[in-house]
Figure (cartoon, rainbow, N blue to C red):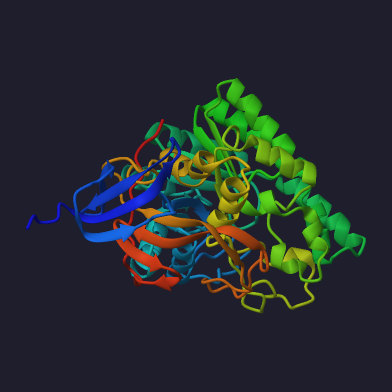
Length: 460
């Protein structure tokens, strides 16, 4: 009897990535994709994917996990609970934040987060380094961290605990440019937000529904424009996070046309929610920054996908609806005292699959490009994001016909689902991470600490 050639063969599926799709089989050896084609030799494990799509695992490059926020509130999710939720939704790689606050050494922050992730993560993972303090030895720490493979930096233009001044931003951009790193920016004008908030509170408008007005669209517009100009001035490579406005898209389009080294993303909630959701009685669930915008903004974001907006992330920012999270300052707290963010790791791929693949708003190749291929490519995650030979066998077997109603709570530790009750078509039935089945028809088959840290390669 001939010995099996492969560890695993997935047969009879439709193999799809950002380049297209075709019927075929895919074989795995030592956790990597070894072959694709038809009638491949036998594997030790055989999986029949008849009637199913076999796609790369999701790569979510914007997740807040086990992190103290800029407002001083701890996330509800640990690395265990967040990555458990990610796997159930078909995401096999996460990039979350190692959050420096003023007075902390960057090197110490990275050690602390690395210990937490190594113990709890079930996805493969990497970090963005939040830089909130460039004083002392922190610039040297940053250079060392980049050389060690931490090639993504996050900076904020707002929030008291993490906001950088323009001179500090320029220092960070030049450091990243010289060391081959990417700088991601939360771009909103702090003074405009403060002014709008003070005006609303003085008028007695303190309910959650006024949150959107407290983050005026001009605050995003000004800061995105400024960060694009800073990128041009320094030559640094910059990613603008969570664009929510049509003007933001236009600014990125113009910057790219001028030759600026700019990338940009949007997030699931901006594509599927508008600011009208803040009129609901439970609106605290949906507060996020920047806030949801108008239908015309949403339409502009959809039109820009795969062009100005190169990827879609979750911006998973999990806070429970209790005193540990959203209502740290009481259930009747004014909107500036309510923690911002909503869970999204588990929902990103199913929501987008339903819209882009099942409903045809973009198609299969663009779905994979936005959720797997582009994030892996832009952030230098060389073994992720495609079905190419030699890539990690992070695979999701989707049932494209299966409909499912989203439950009231997910597999995270948040306790609510912002899209509860929605009926979606397309379900991630089987999830493989490096060739190992980690979720099968809703059952988790792995355990905390099995995720691996990923270095980011230099991308110019």
